[in-house]
Structures are given as C-alpha cells and as structure tokens.
Image 1 (cartoon, rainbow over the protein chains, first blue to last red):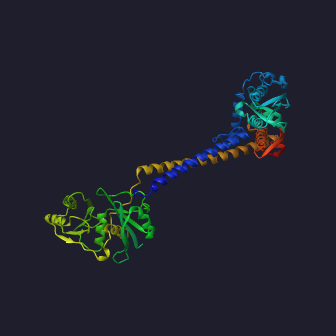
Image 2 (cartoon, one colour):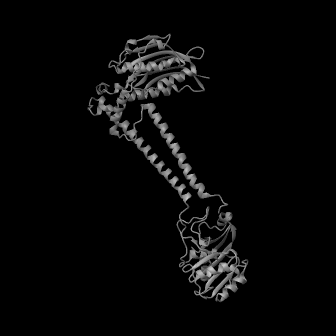
Image 3 (tube, rainbow over the protein chains, first blue to last red):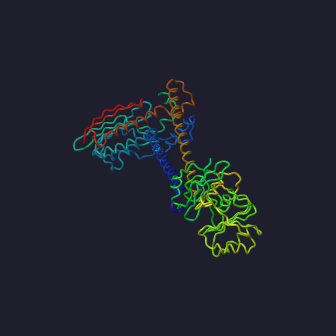
Length: 203
Length: 323
C-alpha cells in the first residue's frame, strides 16, 4: 500500500505535534499567568504551598527579601545635577528604611542615563510607625520615552530587591513641545516592614 | 451478518469478492474482480463495505502476512481477519464440495502454487512462490503436504504457465489428478478472496489470525503521543492545583486579615500575609493598569492618580486627546 498516503504515519505525528503544540501553549499560558500574579502580588506561591503554609511562605519570602536589601552608597544630590534635594538626613544610616530609599533613589538616577530629568527630590518620613518613607520626585522628559521609563520604574521593584514601592500620588501633565512633567510620590517599604506582627495588629 | 468482503493481496493489486451466505444455502458471489491497491478505498465505498465483515488472504515470502498493509482502509479492531491464500481458496472449494478430505488440493496461479491437505483451515496448507521451473515449486509443496500418492485436485488458472509440465510431474510422483471445475458464475472469482470472506461467515475455519501489533516506528510515535498527552494531563492537573492553592491562599489571607482587624489575632495567625501588603500590591497593579490607558489612538493630556495606604483602590483622573 505504499502508493497511497500513509495515514498511520500522519495520524501518529499529528497526535504528537498536537500534543507538543498544546504543551507549549499550556506552558506559555502558565508563564503568563505567573507573571501577572507576580505583577499583582510580587511573587507566586509555589504549587507545593498548601493554604496552611501560606503564612510561612510569606514570612520566609519577606525574610529572604529583607536579607537582600542592597547596601547602597550614601545618596547625595550629585547623582541628580540641578535637582533640589531635601530630606537627605533621612537617608543616613543602615536602617532598612534608609537602605531602601537610597536603593530607590539610585534607580531613579540610573547613572544619569534615563530619559527623564529630576527637577526636585524630597524624602519624607510619612508613616508614624516608620514602616515606609515617601520619596517625592518631580521630573520631566520627552513624551514617549519618559512615559515608558516611568512605567518601568513604577513596575519595579519587588521582593527580589528587598523593598517595594507604592505610588501614593502620580501626576503627569503634558508640557510644551511634547514634554511630560511628572510629580510622583512613592512610598518605599522595606520588606522588613511586613515582618513585625505587632505592626500588623495596628492595621 | 450474511455478507462479507474478502481480499487476496497480489502484489500491486487486490483480488476482491463480495459474497453472501444465507443459512442452509451455498455461498454466492455478488461481486468480484481485481483492483489496484490505491483504489481499494473507493471500491470499499462503492460496495458499501465499511460496515461488512471482511478478511484478507495474503502472503509474503511464502508465509502468511501477519500485519495489515500500510494504509489499509478497513479497521480490524482486534478481530481475526488475516489468513493464508491457500487455506482460504481450499476452504471455498471445500465448502462447495469440490474435493474430498484425502485429496491434495493444488491451485496453480501465475505467481504461486497453493496447496492444502486435509480440512482447509484446520490441517496443512501453504503457498510456494513460483520462481524458476514449475517442478522446483511443486516438489517442496508435495514434500510439505506429506501427500503420499494422494489424489490431487488440480485447479490451474487460465494464465498460469507450465500446466502440462506440472501435470506430468504430479503423475510421475505417483498421484492421480482430478481437475477441479468451477461453475461459470465463478469465472474471474479469486478463490482465496472468496474463501477468506466465506471463512468470516462460517464457523470451523481455524486459520484466521488477528493482525499482529503495529510496527515499531508507529508504536514509537504512538508512545510519544501518549506521553505528551499524559504530560498535558499532569500539566493541567498541576495548573488546577495551583489555581486551587491561589484561591485557598487568598481566602486564608482574607480570613487572617479580618481576624487581625477584629482584634482577635492569635500569635500563629499574625504570620499570615498582612492586608497592608496585599493592598499595596493591588495599588501598584492598579496604577500600572491606569497608566496603560494611553494608547496609539489617543494621547495623554494629563493623568492624576491618588492612592490611600489603607485601601487597595486608586482614584484617577485622566484626560486624553485624539492623535
């Protein structure tokens, strides 16, 4: 029967190819889902984590995150030429809050290569329990590139950086000549903030 | 079922026979002929044969074929559908009472010499491919048939060469010869195809076999497909489990948060992910989604987003203009 189309050959490979394609689709869907979950919650619990284990999962994650908080060099206004810089005293020391704020400031300077220019920087101790500090950035930049940069900077960091940022206020205005003007207030939360149960009780 | 299809593989062609066997009546041939292999499927459809029982008489290198040909259009479903052409042909003539049990049945075609001794489908039978002089094919057939001067019932197909030599050789071996005659309505009917079909409709034919397992490469492909399907199922199960974990995790978190809020927090529950953290994550997500509002058709004019540390919600004002 060699002259006729080999139906068993094609059906066998059709099953294999269909299975392979579905496996790829399932994998991509699963990956996409995990990414979305991470965007929302910072990190996905593993499949092995049972509900009763979720608490310890969170604790261990925060402990791990707190341990990776980078020892960023002392932040000063030299990284933001021309910007007004206030609240530098809140960036002193090696407390988790100070480290987290310095790390976040370093992200916003990024060696001066970002397509935004900071006009003013301010650090405020806004939380009475010292769980977070507020970083206020006034900046401007070209419309498309600056907006993309802003989205990128707001999307990060997560627990892998040892702290989280939380937009308290975002104001974007179109200025002249396709320039965007920003005013951003960011709450900077070191991961250690979420490890103290007494403070949770105060929520 | 009273009808069956029988086939006899002849190289690139197939002889076929559609027969009908009513109870207490001899089998009748309703249709018969030869068809190229690649037209078999169309033939089966033409004869409305997909629902009929069927059998294939086939041999390779003098042995009965144990697997269905590649691309065979009819399904066997584990049934016994394969037989040898010699036994099938002898069965056809045996059922029509054309020879006795002590006779040696010989059918000489252009391609092979088929022989059967004793009860067709029960006792000895075989086929010897015709290569070279007819005597060289006959001798091993007679030897294997262990026919010691038994009468020979001989059927020679019209186009089979060497008939006279064959008859002389048989006589020299001490056998008497009785020509097998078939009625005119069986002219052009391949006895192996007809016998194979008849064997499916009749009890007592023991030389029918189920096809052997598929060849190794096909089995390999099936195994790969099966493993992929199993992996898919496991992936789906893991995904469903993960989904369930997420939901349980969220539920446990909400339960813990409400416990905290009502002042009934215990030391163990305090370790659960705090509401302030999940609210923060949701705010981040909401802000990023809000910023995606500017697309290629519209241009951002102004955007104001204000959030509260005690809430996952955001307040947003946005103005956009058409590009």
